[in-house]
Length: 475
Ligand code: AMP
Ligand code: ZN
Image 1 (cartoon, rainbow, N blue to C red):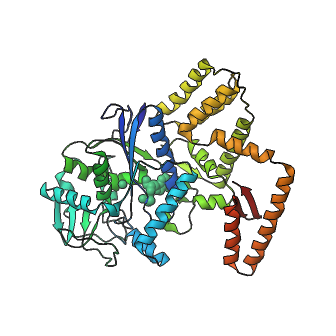
Image 2: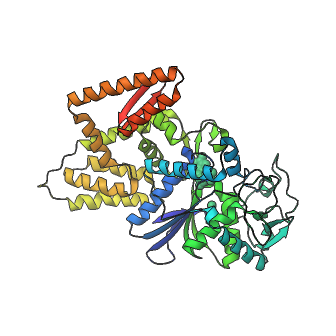
C-alpha cells in the first residue's frame, strides 16, 4: 500500500515496524463543545485508513486521547483553557462538560459509522504518565523550569520544523498579533510541558507535581498516551492538517528526545473541510454539527458519502448544494442496490470478484483514494455478473466504506413495502402529535414540545424541523 507521509512529503510504500501489526495513534477531540463536521471529516478519513489496514490483513491497534485539559485557546500556550471556557459558557463544571461532549462525540461517530478506537484515554487519566515524561525530559536536559512552568528547549534539537520549512517569522510562537510574548521562554518555539502559572488563575483541574500544583500542556498528552499504549515505535500518527504545527511538531520533539530514537514513521494528515466563508471553527459560536444536518433532514451517512467522494489530501468545500448532490447520489445508489435479488441457486462468480475487488484495492492502495473506491462500488452494479456476487462484493467493500450499502438499501425497501393500511394509521398518529407539538411550541411550552419529540423518538420516529415545517422519518 502506498501512503503519503507528511514527514517525507512523498507517497511511500507502507511498512510496519512489527510484521503484520500496525500501531496507530489519533489526536482525539477537545471536548469543550460538539465536534463540527470538519473535525468529523478527519475522523471519517482516519476510520477508512484503519478499516482498510484491517481489510488488508493487518492486526491494528488504534489509540485515541480525549483532550479534557491543557488545550489553550491558542495552540501557542496562551489564552484560557478551552475546557474552562466551555464550562463557563454553560455554567457547569469542567468534568460535566467533558463527560457530556465526549458522549456527544461518540454518538456522532456512531451515526457516521466511525469505529471507536481500541483504546480511548482521557488526558485526565494519565497525569502520572505526563509527570514522569516531563521529569525524564528535565533529566535528559531537554526541559527547563522558568517562572513556575516547565518548558521544552527546542534549541537542543538538530531539526525542529520537521513537516516543512516554515517561515519562521510568520510562525514564531508567542509573537502573533494580539498574543502576549511569554518572556520565560528561552527560544521563541519552546513550549510548555507543565503549567503552574498561567494568566488564567481559574484553571479548574490541577494536580500536584514536583514543580508545584498545576496542569499538563496539550502536546505532552498525546506523546505520553501514545507511549503508554503503543510503545516507543509508532507506525502511523493521524490528525487534521492544522495539528501538524505546532502540535505534532512538538509531539515529535519531546517523544524523540525522551525515547532517544525515531518515534513515528508515518504521518497521515487530513486536509480541512471549509465553508465558502473560510475555516470551520468550534469557537465561532454557531457551527455545523451532525445533529444540525439531521435536523435539516440529512442522513448522516450522506455526509460520510460526501467525504468519501474526495481525496483526504484535498481541501473540501462544504455547501448545502454540494451535500444535496451527495445525498441524492447516495439515495439513488441505495435504491439501485435495493433492486438486487439473490437467487440462491446462483454461484459466486470468482472471476468477477477478483477483478472488481482488484480495482477496489488498487484505489485504496494508492494513498487511500476513496473516490475511486466509490467508483468501484458503481462498477459492481454495472458488472456483467449475478446479483449474489454483486451483493457479496458490496458487503465486502462496506467493511471499509461503512456506508450501510446493503442494510441501508434493505431499509429503504422495507419502508416502501409496508402495508398501506399500517402506513396510514401511523401517519395519522404522527401528524396529530406534530400538530400538538406545534401548538405547545406556540404557547412557549417547550417542555411539552420536547416530551412529544422524545415520546416519538422512543417509538423510532424522528422529527425534522425544516424551514417548510416539521417532517418525520421512521428508523
Ligand atoms: P479538536 O477537537 O479541535 O482538537 O480537533 C479534532 C480534530 O479535528 C483534529 O484532528 C483537528 O486537526 C481536526 N480538524 C479541525 N478543524 C478541521 C476542519 N475544518 N476540517 C478537518 N479537520 C479538522
Ligand atoms: Zn495530539
